[in-house]
Amino acid sequence: MTTTARTMLALTGLRVDVDRHGTAIPLVRDATLQVRAGEIVCLVGESGSGKSVTARTIMGLTQLNPRMSVGGSAVFDGDELFDLSAERMRRLRGRELAMVFQEPLSSLDPVWNIDSQLREGLRRRERVSQKAETGRLLEALAEVGIHDGSRVLRSYPHQLSGGMCQRVMIAMALLARPKLLIADEPTTALDVTIQAQILELIDKLRRDEDMSVLLVTHDMGVAADLADRVVVMYAGRVVEDASPRDAFARSAHPYTRGLLACIPPMIGERPEQLPAIPGTVPDPSNLPTGCSYHPRCPRASERCTVEDPPLTNVAGTAVACWRPGDVVIGEDELVTVRGQAS
Amino acid sequence: MAAVDAAAFTEVRGLRRQLRRTGVSVNSALLYASLAWMAIVALAALIPGVLATDDPTVLDPARALQPPGAGTLLGTEQYGRSVATLLVHGARSAMVIGLLATTFGMLVGSVLGLIAGYLGGWVDMVIGRFIDMLMCFPGVLLALIIAAALGSTTTNLILAVGIATVPGFARVMRGQVLTVRGHLYVEAARSNGFSPARTVFRHILPNALAPSVVMATVSIGVAIVVAASLSFLGLGPRTEVPDWGQLLSLGQPYLANSWWISTFPGITLTLTVIAVSLLGDWLRDRLDVE
Image 1: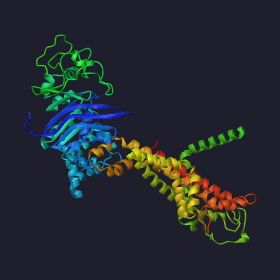
Image 2 (image 1 turned 45 degrees about the horizontal axis):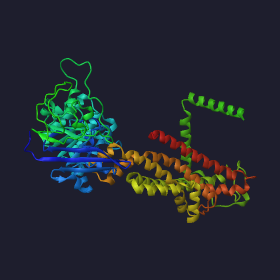
Image 3 (image 1 turned 90 degrees about the horizontal axis):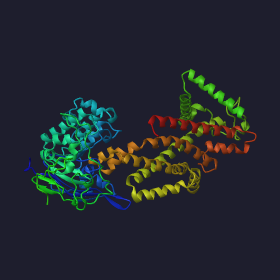
Image 4 (image 1 turned 90 degrees about the vertical axis):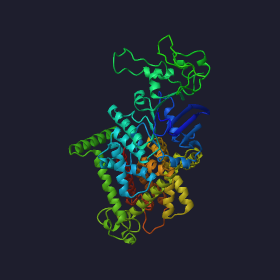
């Protein structure tokens, strides 16, 4: 859609290894994706697929752990993040880059009230009078739908609900007026009704502020609702990068298809048993040969067990599969609509 | 023996029942008793004149070695000074050394633990080995060595006792920092771009402090006992008025005939340490530490 907008974030061949007793275990092997200005990109995949690690690596948080090593490239607004000094990186965080975490209740420090935590964040950005600061805080809280701001400011995290805490976290991220917001499963710990509100809020702020968002989620429904672009990760790799329309209606990768098949239908007859992808995400220390999805893939061929498919562009969709195309899982007859990659 | 125990047990149970009937639990009764005792000790330390009107520096050989009773509440020592008066005037030295030594130990130990826990790696190794080295010596022995090496002044006594409490504080703080460092709000603080110093002092330290505070209360009691032990052994400051440890040793040669000179300082020390520990337990429960 917004193909003319400039690229805010470009990951190319991102690699993250963790050192476990001397052996490097790949948590992210080849993550390549772009987020353009004002765009929401949804990063989807099962637990353990490397989505959160990818998000935290962009923030420079993974690198704080001496056992982690990072390779590849992450260009943010023209700057190569991995070449920046720790100090420059620190300055970017909380100003141009902001992050919202999965567990709102534990993301806030229990010993300080909301007022001092938000104020602390605001002071990173700018220095104004105490009174103006309070005004800005109330404004930010109102923006995220908290209208009794002065009460919330006086509260401590344990006195607030999870939804409230998440709003506070988003308000804190937004006080920074970031160019890119990274939200790591921001609604997973919340009630369904609150989930919708928080997501709507992120979407609205994205439009109002022209902010880019990288939304990590395992909820395909969320991705379908909000995303300008859907990036599917599996076992530390990006396996498909498509517009939501393509991803859902004509998913090229069998894994994306599998994920979609697992969503219970909202209308019509419910199946006796929900379909599930057989097996589990492979252990990163013991990856299968060839395409890491082949042991679970209904369409795996001889070639898939030997050679890992590269991420290849086909008609606006990038896919890493030797036999991509439109298929219905479970059918013996494979209907290939789009041409084969490479 | 067993019969005595059983009798004592029934008696304690009876007392408990009685207290429960009056709506006071044994725990809170002990707590109030501890508070009252510490209030008396604190008063003695701050304004001894209120509790003991006679001058502890005036020697009166005519009144030497009088037993507790009519003339003096707790008897007199060999120079004719009232044991009660000396105990009141010795409170200040005990409290000052107990508090300052603990403060010193807590500050130094916590800073070491904080640095070791936060930085990890070789810094942690070096600090860890240093702490292990200190821990090789029993607290009293370590304080004894330091006091003997530095010379007997109040400041050196505080340092000696304080250093003996450093390892405990360092270990507790290091362990807490390792726990707190892994919390999401610390990562969130980093993702907000706060400097390491800010993250440590605003978000890690306050969350890691509670166990050290509880430990400090217990440590005050230990420090008082260690300081008294050093005084008893003659490593305390030379002052006109003996502190509790010196009073204990003053009475030692007369133990057979004039038991009160040593006994009352001993009881005073014991009560003070128990009271401090009970207050520490109460604080631990209030702060909800393990």
